[in-house]
Length: 267
Image 1 (tube, rainbow, N blue to C red):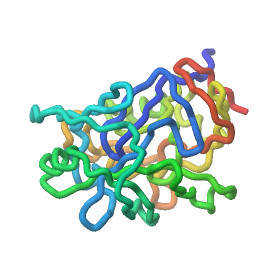
Image 2: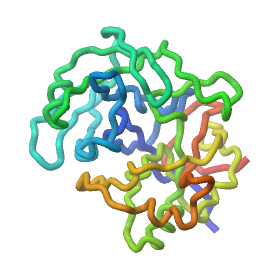
Image 3: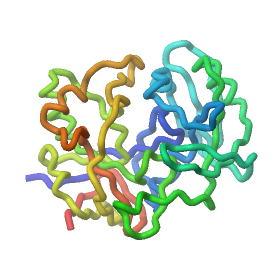
């Protein structure tokens, strides 16, 4: 029988915008390098996401050395460039769920580009390295930080688990709906539920808790249209305490490189 191995590495440099697939990445305390260091906020300094603005799903993101390029898949809107990281900006506080985070606002041309696309005023803000955002101590006792993710630095998903819900729903589910950082193949469906600690390449990950899924998974990455799947099907066999669970949140106990094809060693 084939051993579980890493079949996908994904980062989402801007929260709630399409991710990019990599062949290798550095896994640090806050997550994979460049993962969710940018996000969009409204006039009330609250983060915005595909949950309300479905058109975010139609924005393609491409990496180019030290910057990224955004384009719209449907309307042919001219591309806009954004640096992967910045060294300064106006200090601004913004909310990510219940957390208030001190961020930088560089006032980029992308603000106008995105505002026109979404038909509402938004600003693109960045999380610098010195800013701390602690993981919920209820699940991680030691002081560890995450980036602008919903709550944890890493999300692990299994291709077999995606295939399982796809078969039950009678509809192929794209990996992008689940927004994992690491995708595993050659494991039984939902085997990851029983993993406590794994080694991938140089990195040791601790499984913290199952990931509770929301309506973002029901937005078709290709069209930006919302439907009922996969939540409707998952609710029939993956619901615990009114939460629909899919994938595993993780932290990195030992940092280092991960690469496609790395064996998943269950420790």
